[in-house]
Length: 157
Image (tube, rainbow, N blue to C red):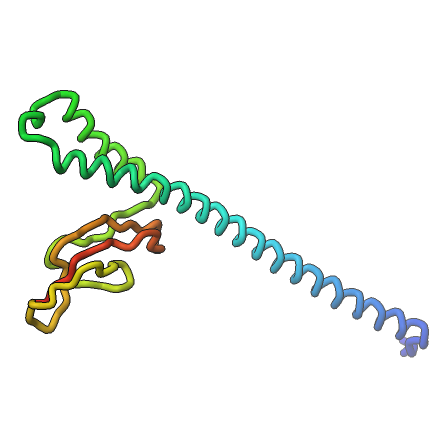
């Protein structure tokens, strides 16, 4: 068995192979990072588009809910009026399938500035905890992101 010493040319070729291998690994890693970033940007664009479309629909939902809430007593048994009231439930089911959730702003709920926007404050109320006295406009979350804060009247208890 002979120990043959690598020639200068062979050493240069091995070094060149090592450099090219390292370059290839860096290029692969860069490409993988690029692909992940582009996938994230695509997902963000889809979610932004969905949120924008939903924001355009929310005033329609608000108006239908107001109409149902202020329905004259003599129309409560009217089939057409009941059909209009049913639209709200259908819209809520459709929006639920898009992962849109209504923010809880029922009276007595603890005020959270992350999801509620205080429009009015009861200055005469006393207490150490701010709670919602009344929901003035519904707020919504798309997934975990607030797309419209619930507008509320706040009091203390």
